[in-house]
Length: 255
Ligand SMILES: C[S@@+](CC[C@H](N)C(=O)[O-])C[C@H]1O[C@@H](n2cnc3c(N)ncnc32)[C@H](O)[C@@H]1O
Image (cartoon, rainbow, N blue to C red; front, side):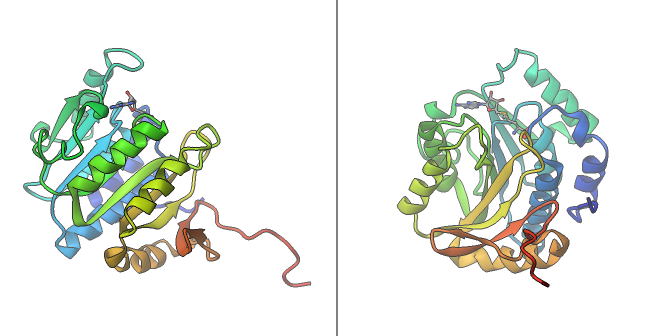
């Protein structure tokens, strides 16, 4: 596979080194693309906080947080009880090893379902969130709730990343996303990031339709070697697909 990078020096150092040593479920492929999006937001003057629901030991969280600009902060939300109570200490250790200063991030231990829909801005006092990764409980009820939390906190030009989309282990989870898109027709899936394998699964990137142009063409050209040119149809919208090894089915095109 061609080496993929975000173009952000600190994120790429972490992706090349510590990333695979931090236990977790997000792919390096997706982390590089999301790191690129965070870098691009900074270049475009889109400022705000970043957040993750389902931080676990910090694999993906650290990549996001290393992309922050001065004065921004990262919030990691988790029950921090699974698979045992040591998970929060391991997260702190991984952040320190990756050079993520303690004042750049906070954590919140709790069940997202206990937060009201405006809880990220209200109770947890975040600034508008420019990038949020949702990777908590994979039930229809919880993802629907987490999407509303993210929606209410989102910067107008911000991005919501959803993990484990179209994962064979969660075959109906997509219904919660489609329901959300019906409730919020101003939102679109701007990019589908394909899986690396069954445990490092696909992610969807969502944003407001009016700002999709800030991301779509840039992702397509920046990650041209990974562009699956046929794209995908999400609710009648042709959607960009990036995949680790793009190839077309061999149906004898040249015969
Ligand atoms: C798959 S792991 C996250 C992996 C991590 N994002 C990564 O990329 O390595 C899912 C996490 O979601 C947390 N979680 C599950 N349900 C939750 C809820 N209702 N509220 C907060 N966190 C939750 C679990 O404790 C677990 O640590």
